[in-house]
Length: 177
Image (cartoon, rainbow, N blue to C red; front, side):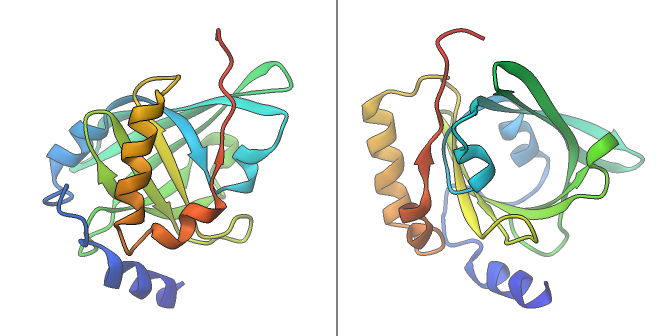
């Protein structure tokens, strides 16, 4: 884990889109984002579709964190996962995810590598159940071709995440929720 953290730390900060992991980043992440493409095997399963990440800044004691709710449809039924994203002190744009409720034993580290008003790219560290991967999230549930081409161009030009682009697959979105 320490080696992985050092590798992430060595690559973080490459992209100039984000200045720091202060409150402004948490506020930019706030709201609903739809998972357009993912390198995580869980989200690539055919029975899973229409995945969204819902981030809400919350104070836990003195610390400002993101409460997150990942919603998805599996075999026609709505499911969700709850957790908190804690900024990692000293590691640029990096968060430690900790599950809540039935997911309380799960942990993960991720970096917000790219973020704009329209899209966000998250870089996930390897865990026992998933490989190192990226997720591409958009504000629009059905992102257009032009936006996706722009995102892929930015990923290809980013040495932190470009190697993981080959592993991403489109996440199916249903027409209605």
